[in-house]
Length: 279
Image 1 (cartoon, helix red, strand yellow):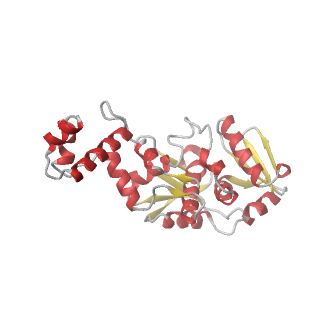
Image 2 (cartoon, rainbow, N blue to C red):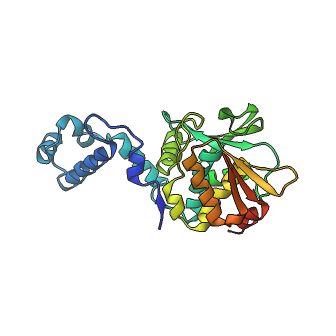
Image 3 (spheres, helix red, strand yellow):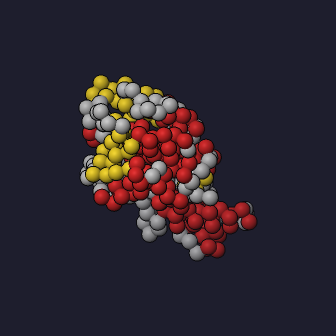
């Protein structure tokens, strides 16, 4: 089973606090809570002495209900059903689509973890559902409310050339959702200046059905049919290693004869689209 959004990965989206990395703070908090459960009569001074920890650090946890930020995030994500999701399930496919969308049709701010999703306003590229339908279904599956902002200008970062897009904005658990996307392998930062170097490693360990979910999202967002040819072009300005991963992903799912590459362009024979739809 391949899982994404582990507690460790989520905690790792938080900076260190003094001498402790985020995951060490989580472990320390859990250790304190376990000791307190076994010794409910002891106050923060006795707990700090017994565990040889600074009283100033653990007092809010023992004498109050405070939690380190990474612990609170992990607890909330667990309550929402977002942790340790099997990627080869329906919920895992929803997260797969959302992470793929950040790569191919959105962005995730490196400082605030604010996710942004875009859906092109035009005819879909030969797939059963429109971009908005696919994205809405994925957000519904993870239990998030959202709203659609109809834009009159093109999307930022020149992701879609001169095409007009709608922006889809999540209305709840925004930062936690963004951190979970990052923990699942979504690229953070502006792709124009900090281009992704690779696809998430878990993607290549997932089933072909899950990898096809990713590929369909990429085609939906980035694919453009070439005029007078039964070929779909996918163009992304990325690192060479990233293009290697994308070419490998599509080739292994379809057939080497149906996938070609030139520079930053990946070309799919129309028969490759039929294969992707069959998964």
